[in-house]
Length: 262
Image (tube, rainbow, N blue to C red):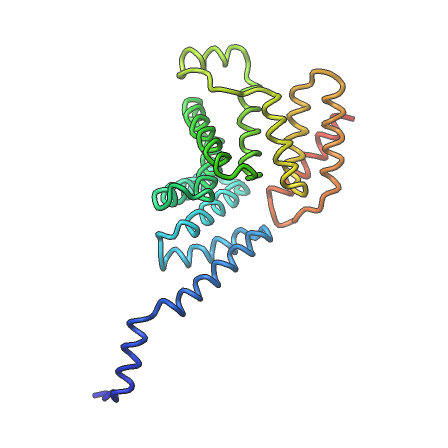
């Protein structure tokens, strides 16, 4: 039988009673590493660390929000639809859980917006419209609390463009069969939003591409085509990370659209 001295027992009780300080420091260190991987567009490494953290505490809003975002980003690069849906589903679930923990968290609301946007890619028309209404509501909330949130301006730009580009017949269906036409949804609104996102994050290639695409899709006269071409040329001068599928995809799209415009 192992005998413990009085000093050993006191030390053991101290460790059991006060485990959080060292553990908390370790957790914050892991979270800092996860955020650094995110900044380097290493979302797989980031998600691995975040999942480790969530296994120790699944209630932290910041961990849930970041994990949701990582799932959404990684899902975009997947070719298998079923696997992609699982990733988007995880992103949506974690974002909702983060919001249930802290309804005033801007990162949680943004993670929810991104997850909804990803889910909408493979949704039915009715689900797309329902998600569009939720996305608009969430974007408005974020920009009231964080008016310089570039990611939200970008999402809102895509939102306006989607509605600006639908046909007259589709507008009729939305107005009369699917619950009414949402406020906004014009080319001008989309250009304003993408321009604001580009001003806030001038080194991000997808702001340039989406703004150029909006000018190209609107095409009222030669000035729209000229603006699109200038934006694409600027975008191709930007440095991108070859490990981020989003950035690589957008660079290819920039090259392809510039070739069309020429």
